[in-house]
Image (cartoon, rainbow, N blue to C red; front, side, top):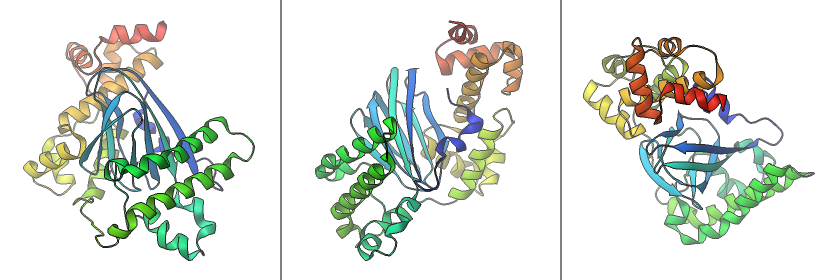
Length: 298
């Protein structure tokens, strides 16, 4: 279950001496178009490996579909959100890496030429590397081996993970850097991204808050028309749809993790009318609130 108030903690890195982390995300019985990863960002570089099902991830306003066996890359600082594409289970692993992992290579001129630019964000890998160059699929065994080390944590696994990830970055850079250095595109960034980050943080922190489209547009410095267009491009949803999705996921968490009544939960997520709340919950979660609570009791 996603806890909306802990989204930014979900990308924590526990060990400063070896700043990487594995998150094995297992989303069960999802509806088509149901959110599996709420809109967020972090300073770390992230690899996502799809294990089961299909999903679409919007990364800095561009959608990327991914299915089992495929890998996508999310650069540091990029806003990203994910939705299931089919009904059923969606499983994916996330490997989050801070550039400090390779700080002992900082004096190595080859590292500084090939790997550092990607970690710093001055050059970006394609989001779906294997779609751009089929050779990349052969590199993913390094990523899977690193995941296995992180999952099982045998002695000195940190050193193995570090070496696997550095080799992976190096092979990827060897593949993409020659032509990317000729075209360092900033097109992946979009206007007002920092203001959008502040708005999303506000929605996540207090999903019951009443926020009009006009107020949201004003916060990011856009008129309503351009705000609606950019928000839909960024998240794949309208503002109302996105806020309602956040509210219903928070409601699902409360139904399964508290003893509050349905009416109390409805009020806590900003729905004054319990009947409307029930209708909305069924629309977004494919079940009634009482059925969701029954899953906890079962």
